[in-house]
Length: 147
Length: 147
Length: 147
Length: 147
Image (tube, one colour):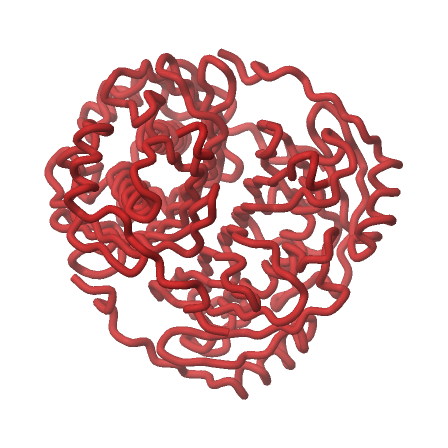
């Protein structure tokens, strides 16, 4: 048995299509972070933190990290299934490993299993000093007639 | 054995003290939601959603719900241990039960176990039509010399 | 908004029916623990630990606590939907609050939302000295034609 | 930033030492599964399922998968910190992706961050047809004076 038992996934949307999708369907998320890598069932989102991303103690806030993880996995899922706005988070477990200093944050989402109705994967969030958080994520994909 | 095996917790900060704390230490969170109830080891936070809290499909976004759950548990913890800005989330598991329509959201945080270094509890988030999400939360409390 | 926004659930199987179900469909679980309370959307399972439930340090093992939580929520779900052997766990998040000494353990499962395809709830596990663990659980319920 | 920002971890116990440790400190776990690979911050445990590992529907039970994930991460942690029996699970989130048919199961635990007091990582559980479950795990490591 090997970790590569699943076939390599095919991305049906590229970075420009993902950006256009957000602009059309999810303006609240536009400008939050940038997709900097996409391929082989993974997507990396990069955030440059500012004052509004901080929490007491001057480190990056939990909601900022949640937003980054959730958006990375949403965009990864769409890159693999196409533009389905109503794909929604059903579970997101977030484990914090280190208080992230202000600066760059990168979230790399990986797909573990993409079924017709569920997408399961994880997201590793790294700061400039190493891993800061890890998310385990499940998205629900609506059936074709409800998209 | 009964669920009340733990002694009833004592709140050392009230709603006005919690509000003053946010204004002093966490301006990014000011105005996000209001504490509407506090007592017996529980705290309820209320959010009136607006356009910026929405996601594709017109329902309230995951990050909004995460923020509400995290902030409710943070304020509950502080109400029980006093003003410790550096209490931080170490784990937050969020399970979504229903897509929440715009409008009022209430998050009720309950403390399950408050130790010297960890606070563990859960948060039930309800919309106008019933429960919409449930969070399982752990906060880390710094030792006195690091506060 | 109140926590009681959902109608009180109706249990369609009682303790004797749940026991008969396990004997017929799940002999591996027979004798592991006893249902000691059932009603108003909650079920309590009791385990008297023995040597085989322990881990290094002489406290009750993680797998024992997982099994108790999972079985409590499975039986609660069946009590509400009837005998559906193929209801399966899709997510179980287990947070440990205290190392449980040998002796009695009680797990109280509560249903937060019972839909046609998903059941979401939580389980509080208590030992003789108070809460020891908390589980957040989702079960998947097969559609009628696949039962 | 790269995923390899952390230094490659050094394993201080090998497979024979891990087996001897279980025999001395954790007889309940002896024979449950075999360590088949160890290195570069990862450990793979293999289980050959039998009748007692099954649940209704004839697939491998949730508790079996939890036990495999938990034991894989425990042994991985010990391989990196040495024989510390009182290292204990504080959080284990288990997401099920596919009902695993009887047969071989392999669990590969990976360390994401190993601190002095906490170990955080994940475990991918694969059956003969691909990934079946994913665990996000945190272990607490006792301070030297309490080992």
